[in-house]
Structure formats: C-alpha cells, structure tokens
Length: 158
Image (cartoon, rainbow, N blue to C red; front, side, top):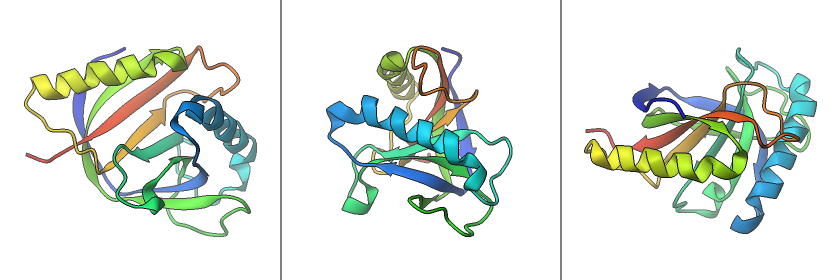
C-alpha cells in the first residue's frame, strides 16, 4: 500500500456492467463482470485513455438505483451503448485515496487503513456518495492475488 492523499475528481461517465448480488457473493461476481468487460472493451465507444477499468459503488445506497457495484470504462460521452451494458454518471466529488497492491481478499484491510487515516486527519466519510476503485494496471480477474487498484473513498468537503 502506498501513501494516502486527498484528490478531487470531476464528473465520471462509465459504460460497463452492474453487479447486484448478496454481499457475500461480490468477491465471486465482480471478477466475473470485470472479465466480461475486459473481453468486450473494444465495443465501448468514446472510451478515454488510459483505458482503465473503474469500479463504483455507494456504501449506504439511498435507492434501489444505487444498489450494486458498477465496473466500466470512463467515456467522454454516451453513444451506442453495447447490448447488456449500462451507463452511470458520477458527479464531481472529493476523495481520500490509497493504492492497494496485493491479493483481492486483502482490499478490506486497505479500506480500514484509509478509513483510520480519514478519521485521524479530521475528514468525514461521505457514505451516501459514490466511491471509486481505479485499476492501475490491466485488471486480471483470473489472477485476484495481484491487484493494483487506487481506492477513492468519498469525503465531505470542508
């Protein structure tokens, strides 16, 4: 894990897949969706470079439309959405970030470390806002022991 910092992100438009499943199945279902996205990336129009997979979720969703986990590519605009895919627009926000390197099953430890840092530095998590997971090297769902993902945990602006 690498240092923690605060970053501002502009609007993010994603095209990809939405995963809705019981919480205990997400470690199985999200990699399946990531693999499917990897296989179908060429179908997504207006993808922005670098073509990194981005995950998005809300910790405490306030509506059924926010339930689940999205995995997609960032696009400049929506056009000809491929069959079976969906879109998601995330408004600009402020985030605390950390780079997780290692096994997928240890990602919760990285989040715990980031949450402690947020608290220790006087920030407040925004659990009703979108969080992002930006994969820093090609996402290899078939190899979940070598994940490099920058975790973006939404914070309230101060």
